[in-house]
Amino acid sequence: MAEGRRVKRYADMLKRVVSEVLEFKLKDPNKGMITITRVKVSPDLRVATFYYTVLGDEKQRDKTRQVLERSKSFIRNEIKPFITSRWLPELRFFYDETMDYAERIDSLLKSIKNDADSEEE
Image (cartoon, rainbow, N blue to C red; front, side, top):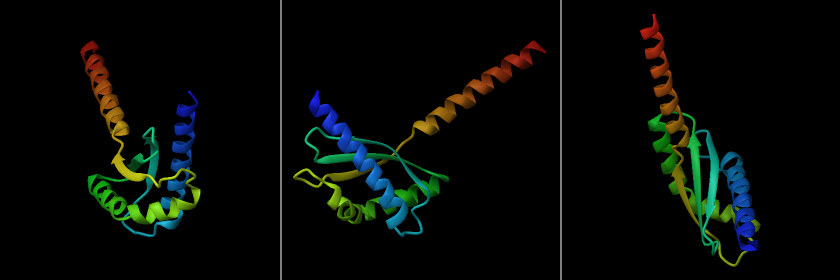
């Protein structure tokens, strides 16, 4: 159980540090408004998977994805002082589609409600 807590603490630390790097140190104008939503770390702490959202449309998402892919080595160098494990983790970035999925379900529920209201009239 202690191993699970260690991985969780490590993931929380990575989320905080990478969020700060993205907000304050990454100067690419195409990055957009990025929010790290969650971080998963492998049990051996060698791979860190970041899920993010970005404000904007599909075009902005693509620009942000490209910026993150180009900036991986810069981000790794910036987090180096905060890493206490033997290895610097490999960084992987994925767009978090949870909010898009929730909005889609919400719109479907609203359309069902509107159909039911129109049938009552």
